[in-house]
Length: 114
Length: 115
Image (cartoon, rainbow over all chains, first blue to last red; front, top):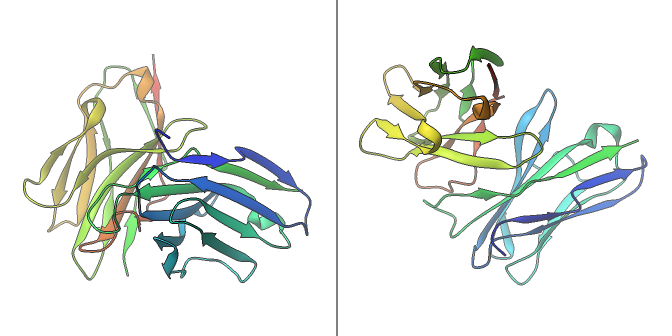
């Protein structure tokens, strides 16, 4: 596609349920990033992928959060046993390679945990 | 570790007035510097970036920023703003030689342009 695509655009879930957020990067982009944007916390880096591997998972806030990428393309961010503090906008970005190239952001998934 | 401080959380300004959005950073290593803009209900769009070379960087929509190494600043400026510039602006850094997508962001400045 022309840009980074994220789905769903909005997700409301009950506390304790698991959710999956999807990111389709720009075709040919080998690097993929997940960020969380929440009130009071600003934009937080969560994880990035180089191909299918994740060299840096340092930003994942707890072991309830996990992410995978298959085929060097689509990525899924999974949050297990959601809590109200997980409510945020989850942004995905991709770039051509890891180093020295611009990252392009998707429009995000707004997650609300009730 | 790096950190980014955006000193103003909100900046109201009248249309056609000049504006400056302030950004200071802290880092023990060399960094790349970025400004992103986020319009309501949209993702982030890159305005401009400083990687090396000239310290005055020009970006899209008439914005520019100047890298000042001694003051560790990267302030964003526009000589005459439009209503359509109303958005949230984020300053960010990444470590030189590493991914430009692995970014440390400031908390953002909401620019509100009034007629």
